[in-house]
Image (cartoon, rainbow, N blue to C red; front, side, top):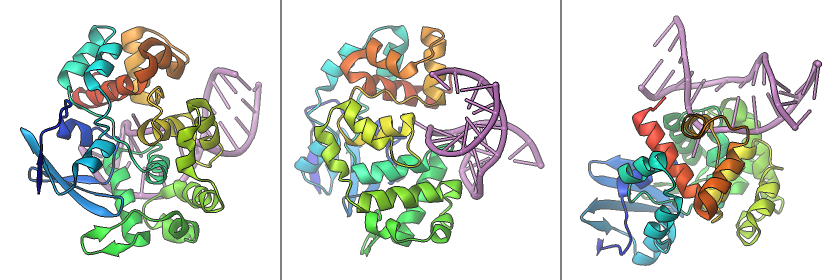
Length: 264
DNA sequence: GCCCAGGGGATAG
DNA sequence: CTATCCCATGGG
């Protein structure tokens, strides 16, 4: 077990319970998740206690992002200010692009507990078993699955999206290479995948491709923006222009705050 | 039982 | 281009 005192503001519960990741579960005071094929155990009691090294923590939890500078830059009004105050230390996570893509295709017209259920089912059925659980399925494993097998995981009508997207990836689309493209170009590529629309593409850009200006727009964010900032036809564009280069942080603070307190 | 969920695709206008 | 409609499933 390592004991680490982060230099950066870091609130573990807000970070892992905010609907950006789906393979983390809290047992008592310890969060457990399978990342890059390994079981990570992490808790926070003043300092961070974990079975991983500081390099992993820094990469996965984006500890090189200067959160105070970022939050200052998005702290534009009383509404976002309340979310920042309530959720201070919430960090965006740097996920694996493939896992992020599949997870958010599953997220459409779905709720968080059920997204978690589906992702666990997929991992159990198509991942690789190791001594502490199942890895997230490789693209090849999903690409050679049958629609019926996928449907058994609870995917519903999304089964074809998952299968066809997996087949496109295995036939030569390297998601990690999208990191080197601009936000617009990366998103354009993602939008060609079945089951990927504006919202899912923005989530993949924000949570796995380092495109911090992405401003995913779901029904919650739509309601937030309309209530706080008035009628708005293009919420994505509004978010990017209003909050700036770190609009994605503003988006996630608003999203989680709205979900916690159900401010209809 | 009922309502709804971090939407996307197809179709019509 | 925008407006509807439908989609499977199970948590709350």
